[in-house]
Length: 280
Image 1 (cartoon, one colour):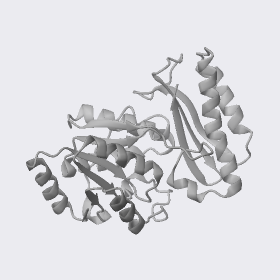
Image 2 (spheres, helix red, strand yellow; image 1 turned 180 degrees about the horizontal axis):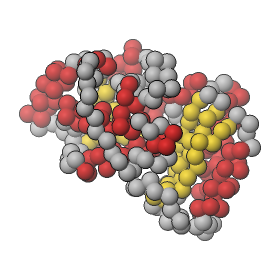
Image 3 (tube, one colour; image 1 turned 180 degrees about the vertical axis):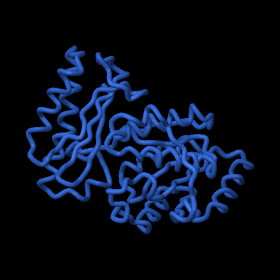
């Protein structure tokens, strides 16, 4: 396994892979790797000869009141896991390597990124798309592997790839859940035992929505009312949004279309922000 920290070396290694006619899969992460990331890497290994895992806490993805310095970082553990999973390359650049002093160029997506998380985190997806564009240029992946839990991010990256003709395939891996149903997330480690019990209402609400649609309910208002009622029964839970949207455009829908409609949820559990979603 190669550990790469510089832009120039990453560019060189990517060129060598291309010259050797090796398919490249990119797994972009912010580090603090967990079982969800391991699932992404496992899929990447089935799809490509060379697997590149980027580990980078993206400063552009954080708003002015968000805790970028406090975001969990575990580079040694991340490298150990990647080695155990037989990753080919770990790209672990410093922030100054990707965004040096004086950096002023950004890539924005102006439609899919606007609703849901885009309302409360208006600069977040600009940071995501800018970093993705840079990674696509440096790593030159044939495939990028993303997690289903971050449904809006998946949709934004799909639009970025289509609009800017990157020629990258998007592979989406189903959400990995813990035994109690909570979606695996780096934020889970911040939850106390009581907070975690309250957080379980998120997956329970998603399951209830699936049950309702399975019995023929097609009204978004009815499903959202049930979901918000369930979430509201926990005192620590503050709903940021619970929305029924088109899974491609992230636009609100008037009727549920099975296989094309997404229920997306974001909540605060005290001071911990969690997201989850399910395609209905």
